[in-house]
Length: 65
Image 1 (cartoon, helix red, strand yellow):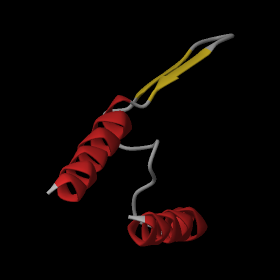
Image 2 (cartoon, rainbow, N blue to C red):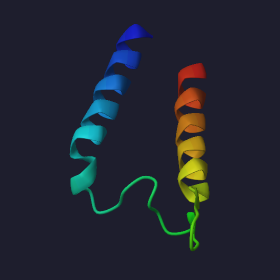
Image 3 (cartoon, rainbow, N blue to C red):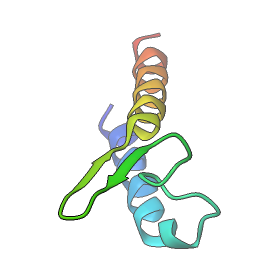
Image 4 (cartoon, rainbow, N blue to C red):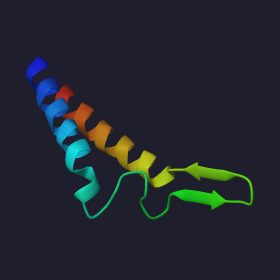
């Protein structure tokens, strides 16, 4: 379990390192809500949250098997 967690953290670190060079950016996916008003800005990354939820659910499901 510790080895799997270590590998996951290494992969996560690599994603943060090369994340700006990927063709998509987490947090700026199509479907994320972004409203820019005159004096306010509202941002809610709904698609990013759903994608991360599905990925984490899949990873946890694999670990439970």
